[in-house]
Amino acid sequence: MPLVRIALRRGKSPKYLAGLRNGIYRAMRETFNVPENDRFILISQHDAEEFDYDPSYMDIARGDDLVIVQIACNNSRTVEQKQALYRRMAEVLAVDPGLRPEDLFINLLETGKENWSFGNGIAQYV
Image (tube, rainbow, N blue to C red; front, top):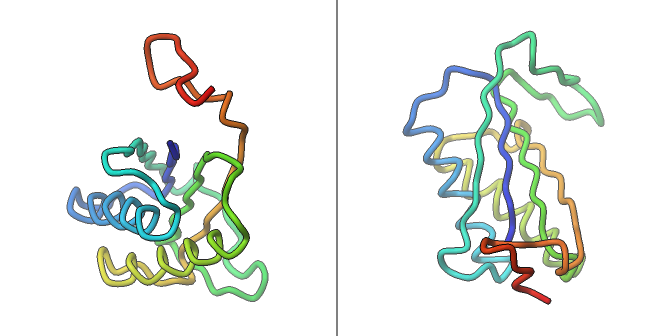
């Protein structure tokens, strides 16, 4: 059910992008009880002038490899599950594709189960 949007600066290799997609999906499976095959991930790449961020907000030293991950999901996870997701995603992405934890920005958008349709014009979770 999570819908994942990944935004980053243009220029990364297909292997790097696959590492992002696979790592985020793995972290969600391990910490968020996401079922197998529940994988909906979009990547958007931006030119430098289209990708604006503060390099030191909250005293975190971000670089041009910043990756912004926004996940729309059901509002059914605990604070502990969310914290586990953030930690696990940083761990997994540090290994592959080699993303520094400082360059990972995560935002969850929680919604009710009635706000999802996976096809056929049906709200499958209602």
